[in-house]
Length: 472
Ligand code: CTP
Image (cartoon, rainbow, N blue to C red):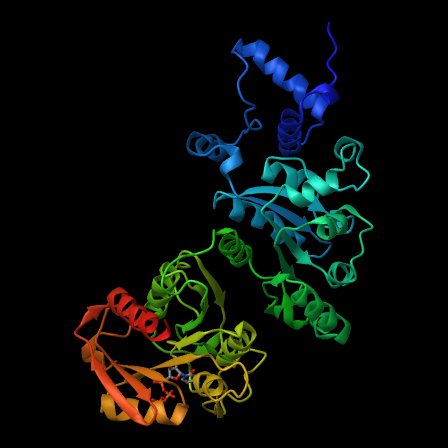
């Protein structure tokens, strides 16, 4: 048998071979053997190098419409935290969005999930070692750092972020992060005290200055018993949507390059672990505005209370429960150019929400003391620093619509108010249609623009068009 020396091939063919080998998780020599075997089996004439073999029905389906090289590519670096199990779901969420995923695991991550599982889900071997004989003979970490459109670090532990901030490169994950010139999205996950620690804050600030993007962490229960707070890794779908937005080619459209923040839905204010105060908001209007804004090229963050609606395409959605969670996420999303507060935020919460279910007792009814929630719209409208250029509130009224909306506009300090009649007869709450009046403040003059009854999508399109006209 004739022997073949890969080094003697021309550079373009070598690069193509390396790419194909890396995608299949094989050495270049093995890949050549595979190509020869396939050629011999099918007796097909040699063509341009095809993509790696794919096995799952979804992949087989996908290869009919996309070639492997057309798929956007993500390198997912899985750090060593309990949230590593969620990274496995993230692989699926990315793949269902047509994104090719290649996994890298730190040594600590392998204490939580195995490279075999990540490799099986990604359809490509998972990389773990800096000095891997199979991939490092041609500086594999440099290839892994560059042969991708985006690097996601999920979960990003406090330790991994500290190494990134320092520029350390003593394992494959950190070497890739140091060698890359691609965008990096980090999803931190750690105990709330570690997240709040001054050292972590310094590292996060440094990484943000270095151009790293962050998603999360969210607040909620920790894996550790009786621990809760900010530190939970964002949900896989949230990370996948953020990744999708970062992979999208630069947007064109009237609001391209603008950052828009939108609140939507009701808030749930806990009474005890099983009961809450809520309202009838469906979130439909806020979601429709988010979808419409994303279509005009804006970078949209939608912060929503509990609703039964799917994420609008191309929108980063952050789900929250209470008014205080919503305010915290709004503040984290700043600075933005435009903020639209369509949420029906509960005005009050229970002063001392019980940790245990309130039981019926012979002593009679429980007395619930209420305290006022923060007013998110007023807080953001009155900011001295980071106030969005345009702040829009909603006024849900059941009587004296224009009068009440006018006083709300003045009281809250926003620029526009979208006033709507939410009396039961209007069918607006939970319904598909809306009749709105847009009050705009120009110096001390208030103009009222009354629109005919429209679907919530039409209201959204009209509002976004009015914003584009004003901002342009
Ligand atoms: N809003 C807010 N935070 C709150 C209450 C309201 O951000 N705690 C915002 C809403 O998203 C909306 C606007 O303020 O954009 C008006 O909300 P609305 O419920 O109509 O007004 P309230 O301020 O609650 O006044 P009232 O209940 O007395 O009508």
